[in-house]
Length: 430
Ligand SMILES: [Zn+2]
Image 1 (cartoon, rainbow, N blue to C red):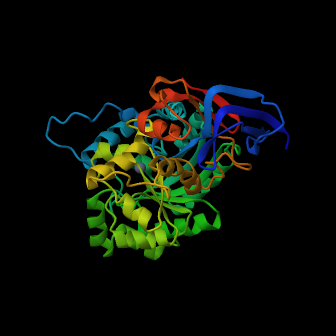
Image 2 (cartoon, rainbow, N blue to C red):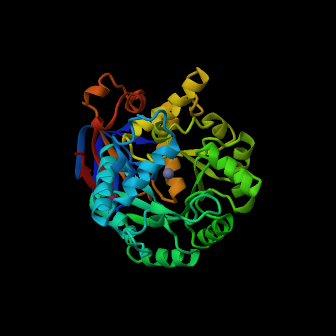
Image 3 (cartoon, protein in one colour):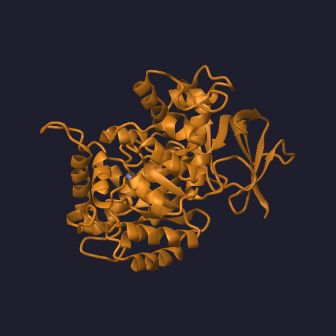
């Protein structure tokens, strides 16, 4: 495949450090062909900028962008996740294809503006009102393509309104119909994907929304088809209690017992997961996606991040409800939540003690692994997905090469992002 572009910024993030005089050759398929001190002259030059791998947002519900600013007043006293969910269902009730497109496109554009180049869209709002036709699946894919973001559509199977209970109200829009109908729809969508930027994964919503036998069947099929498998796990204590009452086990133990767990399985949240249950899951290769800003906004609780990492677990990050889209903010709150809980600093660090490097690995390399993508590094063979940092941005003033990543993650937001690039196509920041 021929080289289409040669990109050169002042500094490039490779091998865990910013390095000078690096050129990145990108081929016609949108993948990185070569990285290093290449002889080929640059076709795209970024003076005063730094080039990093694009951020990978493992968990999003794009349409929930429509709730921003709503549900933040509490005239009847303290709210909970469950009162927030009522507001989300009201949004669902009012949703048509046009509104879903507009909100998804808005969310995806905001993601690009804060450096996110891939979204794992955990998509459960399948149907128009009164329909069982899954017509909204392609609306989300179209919004992603028009926005210019890479998407892994984690198509969601949703069948019960609580363990063993029928769907009611707004939940009817989420109906997976049957495992068979779901896979028929997956095969239909597969023919509509842009192979350069779109792929599929499987996502039974949660133990609340899918019976365990269906979850087992979906997992078996996901392995057969080589698809990643994502599921919400233990975000709320009520879910743990209801699962114990119905199955005699916590969700995490039930899933670890009944499913084949490996690195293609990602559990979302795990806010209330017991540490020994967690050890069994991550010991088998399972990964955990945390969503700090959403978990904070919903009052879920603080996960045992240090325990997950100590057990060898790989963590990735998601923007979930998209109440705020700023990935550096999500990343620093991953560390700050632990600091507040333990009254110590440096809870999420790499072997050399760097919090920024550990958080950046979470946002890039680990995210790519969770979504089954060759991405997250500036390395030959990876997708040519990049973030371009503006080194002259006021909030970065005082940066040095060895502190730049720390300054970016702990001190800045979307204003330092000069551009993003997905599959070799640059998207200027808004
Ligand atoms: Zn979620």
